[in-house]
Image 1: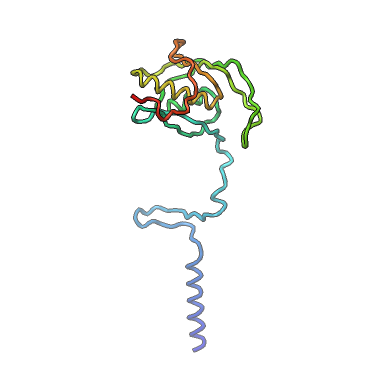
Image 2 (image 1 turned 180 degrees about the horizontal axis):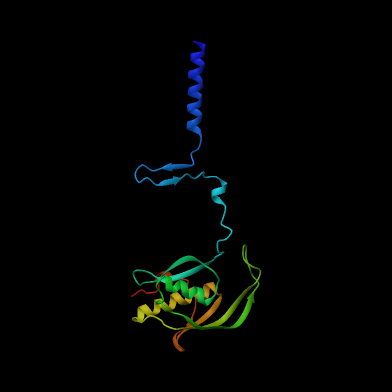
Length: 188
């Protein structure tokens, strides 16, 4: 009797240990596809060392009601005019194929009042001229929103006080500054 009790106890112990061990692959009965189990451990959280390092940028786009702008945060490879224009094209502010023909800044100054988490000195350009290959046609409200979207995106990300936007050398908008009330630009 003792042998039978020991055999049953041993079998139950073996079954319970087998049930607690992790499985590597599981087959989904619905589609027959192998699904690997995630451990949820530290190895799942290790960043990919080959992944491209991106910088965060604020991209401004007109809202659905054409009354203001929405701010979107997105990663870009480098904080420069070409990368910002690519994001504005991606979000539909500028048409496909829009390119930066030239981008020039003038009158740089340094701001030494960096706060917590900021660099001790930040270079700010007094003005800049952005010449684009194409800007979308639209009514005056569309033009105001496009100018504000480009202006806020460039002035915030590239530290510019005033921006002139051109299309193939012809001025589209002048003296564009960052508009902090960007959510309610059009009140008509």
